[in-house]
Image 1 (tube, rainbow, N blue to C red):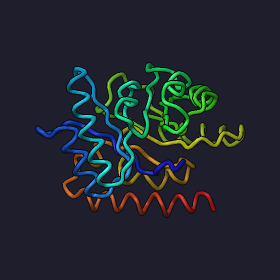
Image 2 (image 1 turned 45 degrees about the vertical axis):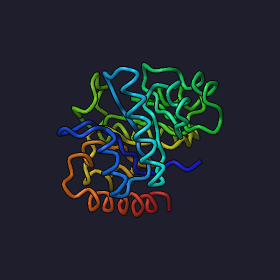
Image 3 (image 1 turned 180 degrees about the horizontal axis):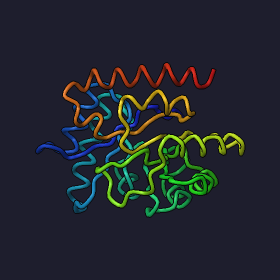
Amino acid sequence: MKIEKLHYITQSLNGKSHADMAREACQAGVKWVQLRIKDSNEKQMLSEAERVLAICKVYGAKFIMNDHVELAKFIQADGVHLGKSDMRPEVARKILGDEVIIGGTANTLEDIISLHAQGVDYIGLGPLRFTDTKANLSPILGFSGYKDIIRQLIEKGIETPIIAIGGIQVEDVEELMRVGVHGIAVASLINHSEQKKQTINHVHKQLSYYGEIAHS
């Protein structure tokens, strides 16, 4: 199962809905969209999820639902991303089956070992630095934190793709990829860009180039 190197996370911004932002991002070239909605009722969430899923199908992007496993199953999302306080991945797997992508959030090596044991398909590890797009932020890792964790994962033979997340900027991509992560997840980097296509193209090129160097 292919895990993209660039994970885009939706926001509602400047009067635009999650679906509006997802459409702009897909038009600009993203192939992986995580819908992260907080503080909405069930009806609103279903409506927005269906809209984003339809957009992803048009542009050939994977649609990942943040949390809300039953909703993901109902609309036949490509996958779910589970936070540390969400449903356990092993329980979600029983509900969703083996073909659905399941990702989990980690902040420590112990988190990763637990998620790996539960059979997740990828792990969002972070945050790199402070970000105001997420409440209840876990302790900041910084580049040194990633280096230490990735080194230990290599020693333990754990190969689950690691996606760096948390306040990532374009200038961070090279160092993160050289550390050995699989890719990055971003919200503000794309959502606040006035030239989304150029930003996404640039990030894709960096992820590909430095990813190849890191694994050569």
